[in-house]
Image (cartoon, rainbow, N blue to C red; front, side):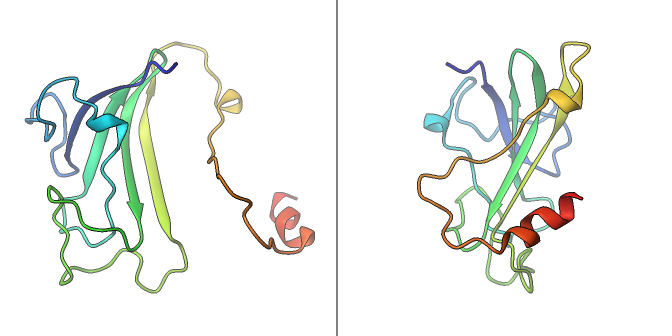
Length: 133
C-alpha cells in the first residue's frame, strides 16, 4: 500500500502546481496510476511533469522514454530537437523535491528499478565494479 498522491500534471514551464490549472481532469485523478511519459521531442517548456506527495516527501517527477508515442497533452513533434539524439541512453527519470520529516539522511534513501525479465548479457564484472572504487 502506498501513500503516494498525484497533486497535478503540468507543463515544466508552469512553475508551481498551485498557480496553474492541472492538466488532470479533476483533483485526485490518478489516470489509473499511469504517469505521462515524454519521448524527448517536446517543445521547450512543454515537457509534462507530475507533482506528487507521500507521507514523507513532496516533489515533482519527469520521465522520458525514447521512441514512445507522443502524448496528446505533450508538445511533441518530429520537428523538435530530440533529447536522445546522438545518445545511447533510452530513458531519463528526474525527481526533485523535499522530505517532510526532519532527519532523513540521504544515505538511508534507496532508488532503483524493477525488471520483469533478466537484463541479458552483462559486461564483465571488472567493468561493473571499477567505477565504484
